[in-house]
Length: 198
Image (cartoon, rainbow, N blue to C red; front, side, top):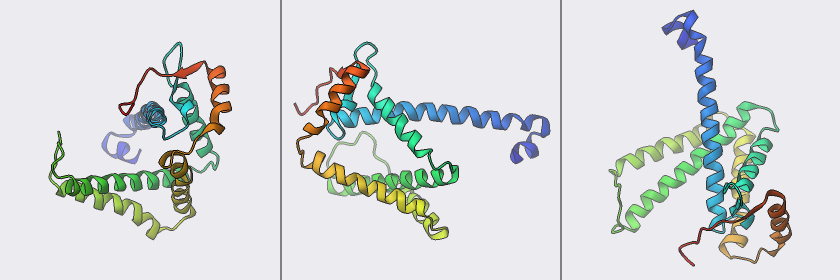
């Protein structure tokens, strides 16, 4: 608003909140579709319960994933403090961006001869890594808050489910009654996708 008032004048500055609103709605819409699709693919690859890889038999949309993503988003709104939510999400996001860039740099040196359709100068990922690490560490040093600890514990807590169910592939028969109930309720079934490993 301040920038709009200085640069555009008082009359035109009113449109700035409208642009922010449109941008937020567009971002939420894109995130909803991308989040549901990411969860659907992860479930298809046996990293989440099988029922999340099911699609509606009429519309061929991953309804269980969309509903699950919506429920998780609503749970994140319970504290009611937008500042805490922004801290929570940005900390987790930049931490994962840092880990992704670290893996890119490590793979660049471990698997030198792998085909790479796009190869960037190594300094760019290193600069991006430094910036993302700064965005993870600086808020903790500048203003240590419990949100950072909660975010870290939730991320580490995911290993409690990942290690036995995905890594060691322990049989997940306890999900069978839930899977059957969701199939009947939402009219969903397995998609026609066949993984490459089969």
